[in-house]
Image (cartoon, rainbow, N blue to C red; front, side, top):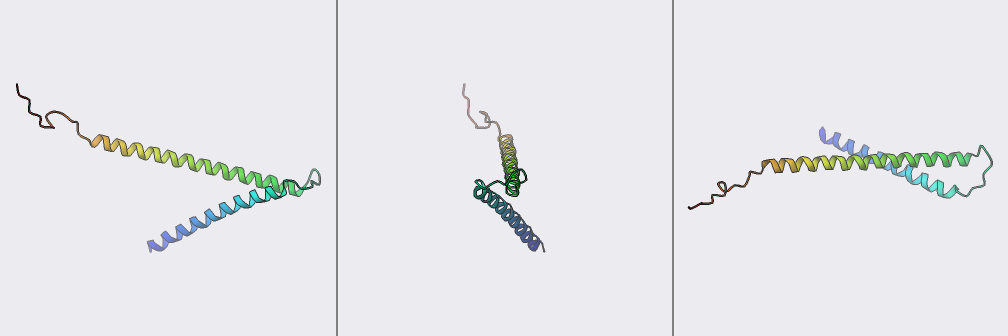
Length: 104
């Protein structure tokens, strides 16, 4: 049962990822195609669509940067935690622990 749920979650994540990438690529493609269009004036439909596509790209860019920031933050916290656990478990190196014989 859990295996089916796990595969469903993975499939859903993959579909969301494909949708985001498709929106990004089509927005950039539309802007590049229609950048030099003949504008009809103040209420040009193409200009409005270019503005919508540009806003979509800005939002996707912000989401990407937030994702990268939190990924690095999680990695830094994990690294700090692992290093602190590793360093706290190391026993102090002393002459007694090394069993160094001290003759007078």
